[in-house]
Image 1 (tube, rainbow, N blue to C red):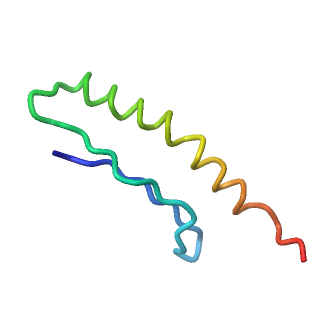
Image 2 (image 1 turned 135 degrees about the vertical axis):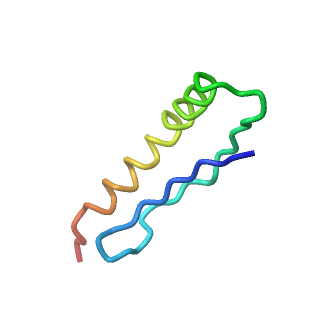
Length: 62
């Protein structure tokens, strides 16, 4: 079984956001089913990733 992971780092290499790995079953899979799994995962993850990036972009107010 394969997995998909996304880790977002800033310019200094610090992890901003990391999503848990999504398992993708490649046994008896074709390209269309793999693309569909990846697309579904992307839609789920995108909201959380965007929020992390926006939070990181906010200036510190102290």
